[in-house]
Image (cartoon, rainbow, N blue to C red; front, side):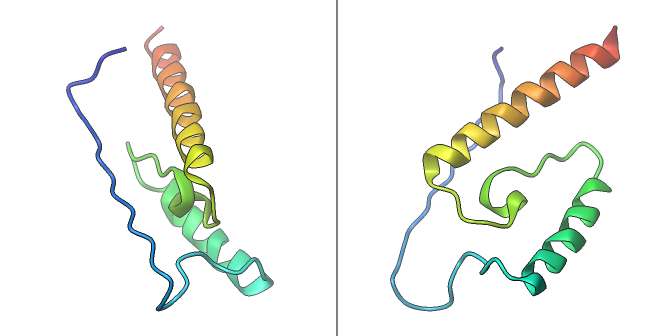
Length: 82
């Protein structure tokens, strides 16, 4: 379908500073569970990609994840209307 909205995202990598992605350990898994619980309470918001999954994705995986979630949300909305 068509949308009147556009999302533009710029990512600029750098090789210094704090790491951008969590290390997959028990502490970060517990933190992700807290974030996920909070995110599920947000009405009409869909979190996608690296931030939503709290892990590193290549950009192609990030885009695929966003498109799959869009399809899922769109189908659920269509089902709710019928």
